Length: 147
Image 1 (cartoon, rainbow, N blue to C red):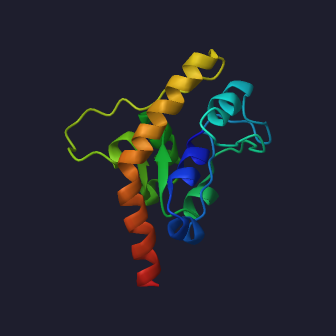
Image 2 (tube, rainbow, N blue to C red):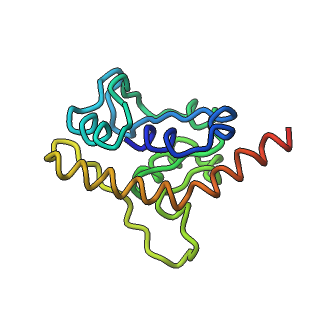
């Protein structure tokens, strides 16, 4: 859901300059998005029906300028795969926070949960992406200007 929400929320300019993708720390590669995640996203006008899962790897981290985990343990797993690249790995919730002392709780994976649990997760992710979007867009545009 987060990949779809971020794609949907970035400006056309930023989206044309960036690649947005997702990978899971415990995901089996090639699986479709769950029915409830597709439904919760579709209810908000975001189509993730063609999404297929893939596992997070060191290679993916190396190819990324920014890695945003949904929960602290996701970011910790990414950092264990690429400790030398820890500066590009963050928890989404903290990435958009104005106050770095605010506790980061993240968004638990609703896998296997009810549609209402997916809707709740969607809403939380959407809020956190809205908070982080200005920073993400600034960094995308700054990267282009530095090139």
